[in-house]
Length: 354
Image 1: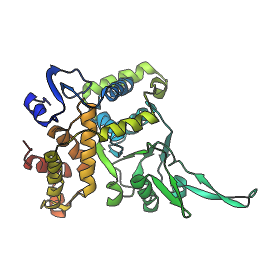
Image 2: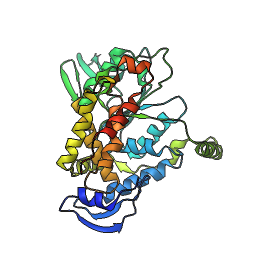
Image 3: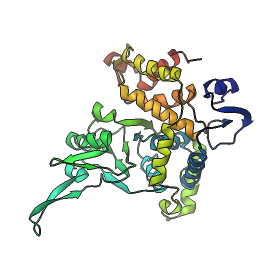
Image 4: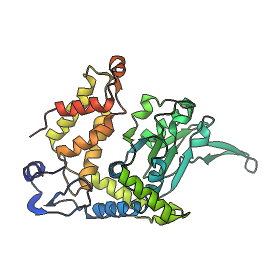
């Protein structure tokens, strides 16, 4: 995606000086222009570059997948990762967690998993004759839920409060999660036996739904070669931490300071509002979708070295922020229409602000 000079000059805030020089960034998609930013984004860019270098030791390709996960971290949002078995959904999320020196926890969701297995439970202490709360695996900075659609509805519902409010309430007591708190969840879209469809209320709590496809032929060859060279070496041993928890919190605060023009805020609102009036859709996106696009666009701008949002940031982050929040009408579903196509049609139909 080539950014043109006039577009950058137009959306740059007045306090930001345009220099017209090339800026070498670590973005995989484009070369951005160099600006004298009011916000220091050098640490974010350097960190993202180092994360990509660490992951490239094991992961081949999957640039968009990795970038969307990084965006979700800086935007302080959760991500639902969908793909057929064997496309490195869990491995990539696990290795990304390894690049951060944070408290990490993984839960394999199964049909017999209970809410207390996730959140924790009160246990009677015979020594003190009192109930003591034993924290569950949800008490972590980064929680990886493998095959989230394998657990029944009551266990999935146990995640509602913690994903939305970063806290849980047990026996009338409130327990807050230590920031940062992020959830990466994987699911298989093909297998239906022994799975439970995620309710809309839970889907809406995910910032992104990231669909992971098959690798390209040349990438698959590199995957096989790399695995052959590593022999039995554990891939996680190759990854070194890049960020600590306090740095992630600092970067999340910086992202919130990224500037977005009022006309671009209106652009986001028009895109989301169009999902509620589209004849192909039975259910449109909620205002939470608008906030998700806003925060994700700011994070993308920061990663690409800008302290302001441009329309291309919104167009890039809108599809993964919307596709899981809308429902096709039965007629369109029978015709073979997909939510991806509807979202793309909506984005193309909304005039880009000038």
